[in-house]
Amino acid sequence: MADTILLVDDENTLRESMGRLLTRTGYSVTAVGSGEEALEKMRDFAFDLVVSDIFLPGIDGLEVLRKLKEKDPEQLVILMTAYASVETAVDALRAGAYDYIMKPIIHEEIKLLIRRALRQRSLVSENNLLKKQIEKEYDFSRIIGVCDSVKKVLEEVIKVADARSSVLVLGETGTGKEVIARAIHSNSHRKDKPFVPINCSAIPGQLLESELFGHVKGAFTGASAAKKGLFEDAVGGTVFLDEIGEMSIMLQSKLLRVLEDQEIRPVGGNQSTRVDVRFVMATNKDLQKAVREGAFREDLFYRINAINIKLCPLRERQEDIPLLATHFLSRFSTELGKPAKTISDDTMALFLEYNWPGNIRELKNIIERAVLISDSGTITPEHLPEDMRQRKKISLSESAERALTIEEYTKAVIMRYQGNLSEQKIAEILGITRKSLWEKRKKWGIPRPAVNAVSSE
Image 1 (spheres, rainbow, N blue to C red):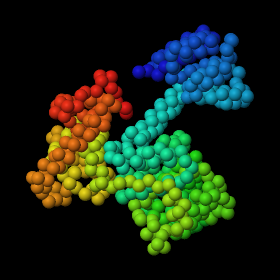
Image 2 (cartoon, rainbow, N blue to C red):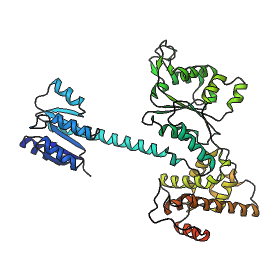
Image 3 (cartoon, rainbow, N blue to C red):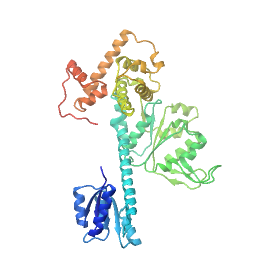
């Protein structure tokens, strides 16, 4: 679909010639002769770009610009004038014009300016879409789970999201600590500011201080220019310090000072700068043990442990394993362009038997691998890693018991989402067809919800 342009000029000749030029260039052009007509058109239709003369009878171009910006701050406007001055240019740009151009209009200049303006609009739209996708990804509804421990974590996230206090997220590797940190940020008043994740174990100790605090020119060999640190990059937002237990004692001391004073000092500098930053930290270590062993500062531990959120390992969330598996199956089938797949009962039994030392991250990687290598419509044990397949055989009695667990889980999911999610969505969560869902409802005597029940996502 062609980009739409509203052309506003009281000179008939210029309006007609520019209209023809822009139409030949491929734009959909609407031309009017006054500011009043322009505002009337904009009430009924949203144009991608407005190109207007400044000097118009009645409402002039600057007033049109101001009114359009009041309605939509992202509206693109280019102003034209035959009487440009520094004051005119400043007024136009202050009022929010993308740019202005001098008359007489040179065709190649106006076409280039319009291309640049519409390209910026496209980038802004893409950025806004990306932000919405990120917000959706880390909205509470995207944290998958029905077990009591997940419900408790979500309640805790809600309580702490808008607090100023730092939060410590505890859990084994792969339990989703960064997902929770992003959920805290995305549901706080800081959500439109940066979220800056930092893995303290991934950056060598001698470089971590400079990465966090920045440095001044000449602070050390190779510091040929001053550099801002990640703490400054996160001003107004949230810093996520992952693997905080790996931070050196020296850096722990500096971090404690930041937490208490909200000030940072770059490496080699002698001036401190105040920073408005919220900290969320995470570790898979026993910090109390680290304190006893002298590897973690006691005062820092008590400072960051005031509010903590503990994440359960996946082996303690068995009822969530089928839900997570079908979620990742749907996600990777879409991302990898594969047909929709299901998970066989034998495979699900293995999933429920497995200890998941790598937790959710391991499950996600196994599902992604299975989707990649499977040529059939069902994920079977042969699509799983060999070490997982070679585990001891489940006895027939254990298999029957495990099948009962899957049945109980299926029934629980249907009851939980009854009337809140669509039939199609519940079927997708369970990895079954709508017909199978209907048969299971009939088997257990669960009535179908009202016809107007809709998805909550």
